Image (cartoon, rainbow, N blue to C red):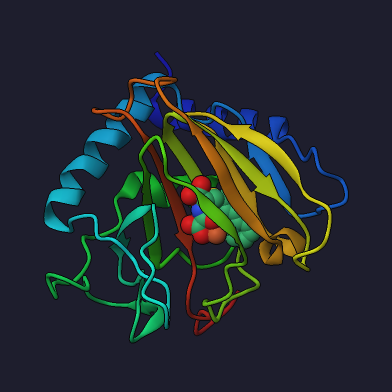
Length: 229
Ligand code: MD3
Ligand code: FE
């Protein structure tokens, strides 16, 4: 019988070969459709559920206006992304409500980062977004990280979503793509600084997240590594 390691290596090679770089005008974007099979999706969902008991989902708020996001968030890793009225968008080593350090990044997430990126250092933050049926995320760029040369890796679990990817300026044309449970996307190069958002959730399209809704995990390098290889 093939070892677990050999199986994982084969899986990785297969998915590297199948990376669907389907947006030629946005180099650095890659889609790994169905990267996680159903068993792996359920395993990861259980890990996230447990982790969210340690670091509960919070409601982020817009800087200055204090308007609440419709998406709820938590994090794991040494840093987490937070936002509130007074402090604005930032990375923090602790949970904004409990004051506790974020839970450790699970090995299963580190393994995905290693499989789909060539970045010479591990991710420091995993932002965990929860979308109820009505939640949306407006078009924005992610630029609170110092390491903008590092890719962002997104993992979808639960209900499907309509993802929108634009260009580096807000008015650039955009296109949509449905993201389903188990899909992984990588945003490196030019895609790293592209506007993007979530137009809508398709409720009842998956049973992977108990109670329904969608989870999106984004793995991020925040600081520049000391000794880039
Ligand atoms: C493109 N999340 O957390 S993931 C976010 O599905 C975010 O929850 C969405 O946008 C979600 O910031 C989209 C895909 C994604 C993530 C990060 C990106 C696309 C990106 C960073 C740069 C460019
Ligand atoms: Fe984003």
